[in-house]
Length: 187
Image (cartoon, rainbow, N blue to C red; front, side, top):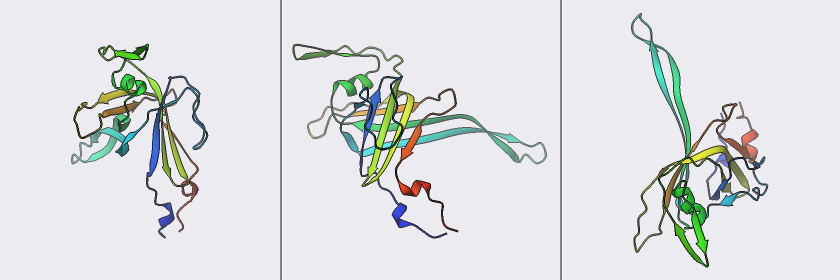
């Protein structure tokens, strides 16, 4: 199989978005995000990590105890990133169920015990003229990291989003204008 160095991609830049759960969803890789979507802001140079995990159960045959089948017992798709821009959006994502209230230029955040806070999420991954857009129609912040207040680094908000399946089982949709997505390897 011939190699194609032109199909090697690097996530040079991108963005993370959040919108209300039933917002209009993007339908391609480059159109502007709907007005209901908010850009999360600066993300650390670690970028965005997509994880897909599946746990399986082995079925062993009586004859020799060999594995004859594996059944997927659970699966999960998550996206992890660290926001380094402090904003109302980021604070409310990090402190699920809490709201920032601002009056006369002064803000208060009464941190509540976390509760359900499902939303739509999206991620743009850009390498020059190659765009990948990932849309999570139903997701939620399910893990957060520690906030460190220190004189030589940005205050950072480590967020992990879990993608939940829709009625058809879809947990995320990926769009791209990258020509290599449609190419078959040459024989």
